[in-house]
Amino acid sequence: MPTREFFARNPPFPSDVPVVQLECLSFTKLLANDAAECQRLFQTCQYIGFFLVNLRGSDEGETMLKHAERAFDLTEQIHRVDQDTLKKYSFKPPTDLFGYKSAGDMKLEDGSPDRMAFYNLSQDDMLDNSPSRPAPAIVETHRPEFRNFFHHAHLILSRLLSHLDTLLGLEKGTLISLSPLDKASGTSLRLLQALPSDSESKPRTDLVGHTDLGSITMLFNVVGGLQVLPPSAPEKPVDSDWQYVRPMPDCALINLGDAMVQWSGGIVRSNMHRVATAPGAQKEVERLSVAYLLRPALETSMQRLKGKNIAPANGQEESIHARDWERMRAAQIVQGENKPGSIGGKKAANMVARGEVLAN
Image (cartoon, rainbow, N blue to C red; front, side, top):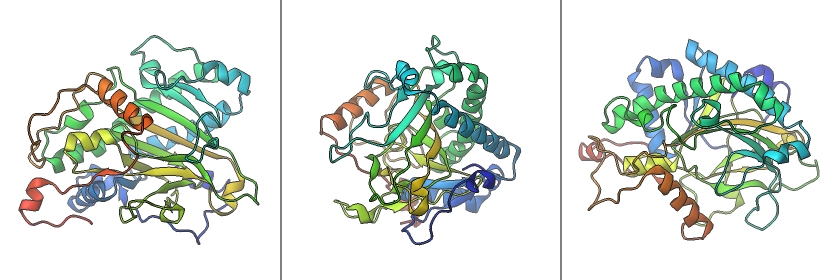
């Protein structure tokens, strides 16, 4: 999340709400290949697939924080543009997921309108991998800054994924090579706004529970509202089973997506999460957040990877590219054939054979 200056602009996160316990890893230690920090990374990727990374203390991390702060400023400016203008650039799901989505365009589980708005920027557009998309003046003016964000966010995630390469027994650079900057993909920068609630209103869901379809997500936020369903939750959870994620200054929140589960043969976990009314006095303020969602290149194979710690698939796997796999997964959810739920989290084959105990 951005620096303490940004946190000081909002009411504090309350101390009396259920909070999920997440690892907070040091980016500096990971850059130094600290063995204990790398092991903590793999354990939390297997157990819950969510973790915080403190970006202070390294040039790369400090630069990422500066990009995140600037993205927060631009997110606020975009959502101050009048609705008539923004709706000229509306996204058109399921065929086109880029552009503007206004609050209320999607429905919650009970059929009521959602309370999330966002502007979704395409990596292909910002990095000139595809023809330029029409966009509001605020986006056009700041294309160079958005371009820099994409480049640096990709670099930060490449550092994290290099450790997962090692821990899964893959050749160095394998995972990040599946989502390159210069190949067409669904990778995006999502600039989100959750509307404030009246002080007397009851807590509610702003965005339904889901897992991320892509490879890995990096989120920056200041105000609470994001909730995670812990692995210990029952199969049919109720509202009280969901736990808030406490935003932390100087940190990015990372979570693994369904594609990473697919490639790893289910070793790592893609965990259910949702957005709810912010806790305490925070619910009365606007909640802005910035999410970088890394997805596979469209022509990337979604077959299980061959790594020393990845168990071979049972039988012959169907060959399918990310483009078709993402469409298939989305269609299954829409048609009710694949109910949203956490997936993955199996122990690595060789580690189990050696009798090593991973987080559980």
